[in-house]
Image (tube, rainbow over all chains, first blue to last red; front, side, top):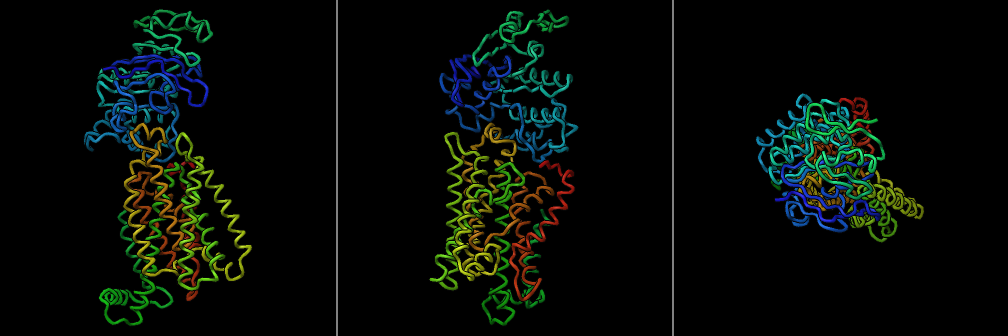
Length: 257
Length: 334
């Protein structure tokens, strides 16, 4: 069953067209990377799928059904979204924030606790569990929010879809790697992941498919090797770069000139 | 939480026993027994049964309503400094009461005047909330930040109209308006207690069902939506309950500043922001604060009574300020 299907989807939440004629498909376990310059529509696309902005044309199917056909709670069990910014300014402990991700589930306290501690280990925040969220650094907060959406989607399996908007933006190199590992782990369990990341070197080693957006339209879509080319960087990002083979892994690598 | 639950009966007992005529604890129990048994009523039994008990219970119920409504409002607006009066209910109620006093005051006397003022206050509060709600609701749902601004606008408008009423009022009316604005339990009676009991029982049972929703709302509205919560329905329900609760309390005991703002804030500093604990704890703390404040208002310059709103502020502010000075211990940022 296809997790997400977009057919010629358009969105114009504030009058002008933000997303125009987007067609995409995500299968279970697939990792989709979204790339593109600032304002290209990466976040808008994630928000469209998450339901924050409405479809103004075309079709959006989640697991074969439209959003309206899903009961809220059941959709929340298989679709989780990590926005770029978090507004939380109340002094929850880290553990409490992560536990909020289990709200749509009725799996019982002991199962919820087990999942919470697994995702806190996976995001390296177990040592912070008693700390107050408001007293954490930016990168720590980002990992806590990531753990929250992970706990929401952890046991979703094949139908699951996790949307991540710049999950590595505030993270140091080691924790960026940690996020990539978590995404791989989740995709190995059958959960699909769509993520917007600026660093194409990160995404080229992670994504099965990369979709490049420019001006609200899909400029290119394909495997990392098809997408990460010097020509694309000239056309979409207006910058000259060198593309080389990664010395250790089978992935292209971007080197700025 | 347990300490709060234990402190409330104690505060009620003290509230019943002290006053212009001081009674011992044993007298109180004897009087309570004779009140409920319907036996011979001596003077102590009359004081306890007819004056103090309804008054203290009214204070406890209204304090609980204000405390819990305040906690729910702060959660809904995601702002620890929000207050139930932000949605316009208090200002609307004050205007309604002023209208009732000025326009109807001379025709009605005594008890019916008091009731007319209460009805005017409740109607004024309800109309103000409806206005604010309509202003903040557009095609994309209800925006809480627009609601806050609309609340400020309606509060200013109601304040201006209220001043106009005061300008028209004679000296006697003016005094009644300003006393009413300061709040007081002196109108307590069993019929009013029944109204208060029904409203507060429904509210105290209804709001805790939204604990999880409020917990998720602290993350942000769209985050709560992604957790499977029907945010728009929850907003309407919460605003309605808060309007009913605060509207009733303003109608019955006048505007009592501070309880709805500060009690939840203090309780959050002590027990954390989890609404499953915060809501009932705020209700208990609000009840205790108002019972203690009402007791003090009767004994400070007895037999004259001070308006209770003055006392809540005088007790609450120093406590609040001392907590604010060490707020970094509690992780509050704003």
